[in-house]
Length: 349
Image (cartoon, rainbow, N blue to C red; front, side, top):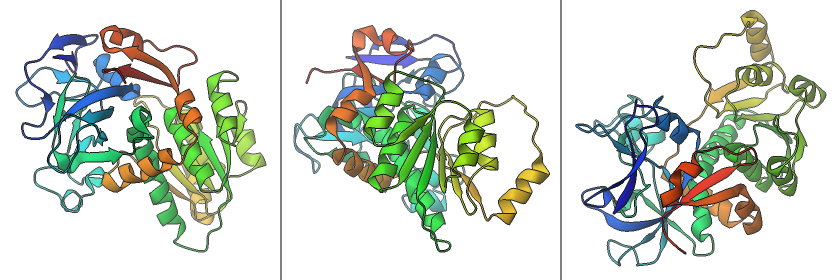
């Protein structure tokens, strides 16, 4: 069977190779991957900038956003069921968070992640997954469930935003989402499902992203972020770009008592001047909260499945810009101007 392998730390080392056994857990449920989504982390790994192979190996099977079908009945599953494998595994110690099933909040950094950190990913013709780390997906959602993993990240962010908001009386109305990539669009979807007013900011002025934002019932802006923030200070901000100047703007300009969730990861090494005293003064005097959020645990995956099942199927289909067959995987990593989410197809419907 074929698997897409890469040597972490080595630029452009990705190659489609034969493997002798299903990728994944030695003892698990046989799953036939149907599609694997490509994200910025995959691109970083292919460029040699990120990623860790399994111990004792040089190569890593790529891919962590996956939907598949169960191959045979057993272990609590029925052949043909759609499932999504969970990406992160708890550390072996385990820390207090991992022991409680909250591996997304791992305290010692010894967690592992499929397709990213010390565990093979899912971009293979067959995988074997411990049933404790499989999430069922409704038949009606089907192959669109390739969006569950990125949605789980957003579901966690929203859960934590709402927990923080309950520290005091709170009636949020306005949400700003920065970035109209997959994470930003899914953050918008979950905000609209909560009945909130949403504005999305992105530099792209036309094409698929503005259209998807408006179809979701949100406003779209592409110029003068600071002006947008001053005109209508948001109660909630989900920062999904990681762009330095955008992060700084959303920290400085929001409503009193605002909650800002940083979901995008910034590149290190760039420096911009910051008036730390002024920033601190504003945060303290307005009771603002800024926090970071990454990854997800089982309950966030399950929340993501419910959110996607309740969404307009045609909107979800429009989020997937291109579906590329496995033998043309290189095309999936070539970014096109109007791409939102690109999926590598591993099996026919």
